[in-house]
Image (cartoon, rainbow, N blue to C red; front, side):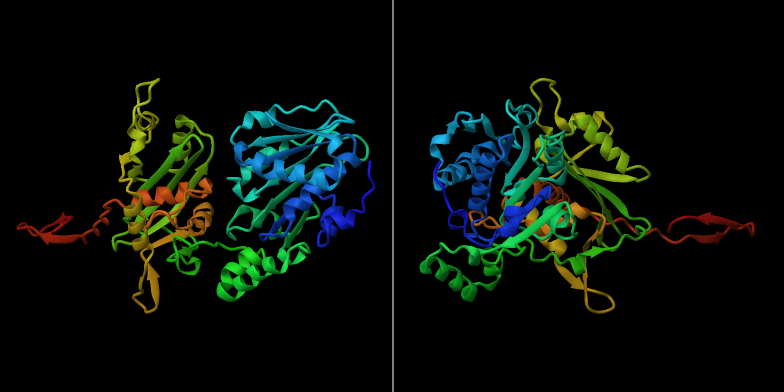
Length: 444
């Protein structure tokens, strides 16, 4: 094997990353920050160094692996000059270190069976690399993957999950889990293009021009800070205006539910509309991988004690299923959750929601909002401001990452429908009858 001077091949800026053995090694960074290339170099180098180690590489979809992480690992093998020692296969994706039989496996979260069926013939599966980790739809999905790395390891080995990604919304669970609260189990760092000594002057000018032309884009794409680039779809949403601490629901409020449902996720919102025409989203149910009966049970449980006026749902739930001959809407009704068909006009629905979010004058001065959100609706508050405008369809938002669209879609099904506020209860009056007694009349 050829001798190499590792710092020359890896470069600077990643010394702490290279040496940490924390269970979670988390790196967010800007474009051209060499985070993926450094990670690929680390894995190839250390698979050779630790002859009992095996690696699982994960992205949200399997088909995205070959042109991203698989290619980066092949590049790292070439850069380290160890091509004769590795065999790279594409069907299925797999890299084998031939002297020992150690393997690099590849799997997508879109095929969970592959994650549960991975077995190693040499050593132990102790390392996981999650590339573009912001694509992971929920913290629960990450926890399931995390739990798969368990059991005793040969002496000298250690368990570690590495997450690399470009920054995304500050409402993403990655920030809360790995960056907001220091933990001895977590090594988290932010990198940017300035650590990449192999960029030429033309590359650096791109970032300098971005800094001058679009400072907000530079902050995210250049410096690797949290943020949304590319056009926030709901600039109307302001947490200081729209998010409030829970309070008793107004007397006489009309209670609506709005759901978005598929096998991947159930999103259900509970909305109270008062007599003034103002509304508040006061509760949410957000769960994954529920069949209709379980989804209905979750909705019923959250609805206990509530007088539900209507439950809006998308029209596709009324399509009949080939096997049962029943629609999903019929199955929900059979399980105690009757639905009302909503309008699925996306552009019209978003416009209606923007109207709901538009600030109005407060009676006491200043600004108020027709639609507010209780602070306990954490997933909706996270997802709604994370939606990006679709540059190819005016008036619509992007549907990726898919995980952040379910709850806003449910809210859209409410916003587009005609929802007249309840009438105020008339005061009770007393009328005297001819006999000198009194009789009660409830309304006039």
